[in-house]
Image (tube, rainbow, N blue to C red; front, side, top):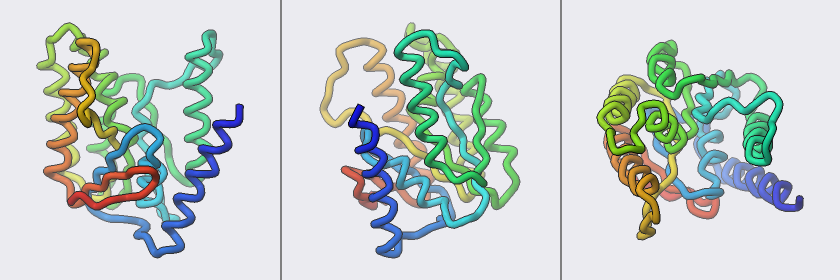
Length: 209
């Protein structure tokens, strides 16, 4: 029970400390923010697009059940609610029945609209789920990934959050290997078209590109 308040205070502290040091707000251009679990990458990305301007927040996770029936469903709902409370009230949150709907919605945002996509790992997992890719038939999910890359390349003012994968860990399952390989490829291709790439470690941003 004590772990959630600790994470919340830490994330708030990260944002406050960077703001006091003059960190950029309302960032423009294409930015990829990478990091491990609980690294502070989402909090950093949210700060980049902050500053009072309207933001379209693309929540790539599954929409939580209205009435959770399992511990896992309740945990997911609590996690989503925690993220929702952290975001400013004037941001517009977009949630998707299908992960592939992210692409046309991102493409249709008016020019100059700041967009935050959080995160690519969850998006890719859902796309592989929806296209049956865990069996090894990855052409459909890779086609969706190419469409996303093309859409990002056509936009300005977009910040994307993604897990940094690998770091020497060998997945123990085939699905784990597929996820690591496919997300590693997607991260590299998104990074190549972004103006900036930032790696967040222990709440500290490090410029990669």
